Image (cartoon, rainbow, N blue to C red; front, side, top):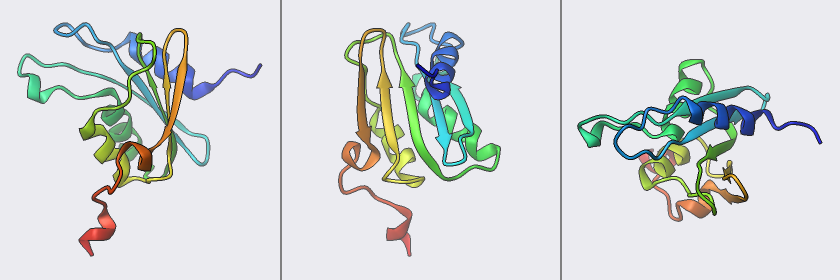
Length: 129
């Protein structure tokens, strides 16, 4: 079976997560239509509101590299079943495409969603026009 580069990148990013307060380490990887992969991990802060989720970190890395069209986002956690992204991450994902697939992966299982399923009736840039 061919290795899934996005899943591997998400698990590797999870290992680098900075989660001294919650212990909940998350890795993510954004995949573009061209097959480019951009990883991110959660980074906690003593001021909890400033914590950055792995999903948003990966999206920010992709945008910083010039990518704004994503087909897939992989989220790796040590939970089974895998946890879905938080509400803030769902809104940020919606900015870049409601049709993108979100793969949640855990040690023993996986789950799959589409951004539009995770955030029904999303507020999008189209509504800003």
